[in-house]
Image 1 (tube, helix red, strand yellow):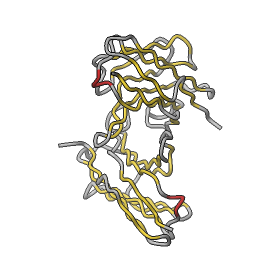
Image 2: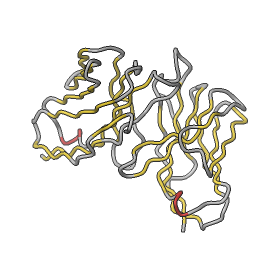
Image 3: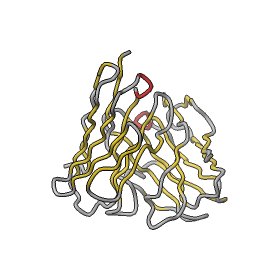
Image 4: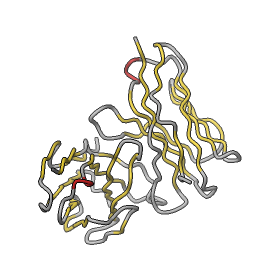
Length: 115
Length: 110
């Protein structure tokens, strides 16, 4: 079974703090994704990566950066956390197929509260 | 206009009912049509997908796509309390990523 793990289930941070969210997958997947999920807005793509050290902006990259130094690990960084970044953050991975739309396997999510 | 529109619900049905969940989309270039299910406090998991117009059946679930009207449906027969979850449609293939609907919250009452 594919397993995608996220470093924390719940996080509470203060405005201005630098926040690291870690995601690890164990299926040797090429593609990894970071989403945030908010009520009424659904899943929105922040960044994705299709290979080590490669990254592409999604729909809402502002205020975020990412790092992929190893194939299995994809980190999301909030450089200076703000209250509007309070959200559920979901990591996903997929293998490389005809397109990036191959089945995405999601982690359990990190619920981040920024005070 | 959003690329994918989905009624957020909540939708409450009695056990054994037939459930119909629907999405509309605007981009005629979408080629893949996926349904994800998300239980409370969990990440989404793929339920079904199809690449073409028509129906695809998997047990109690049927995914239906009508490309001419840009309409996606998921039918659940003999619904069970364990089907209570948020269902997200996700068409893709127009760009290099999936576009998720906002999700419909379904509650099946025993």
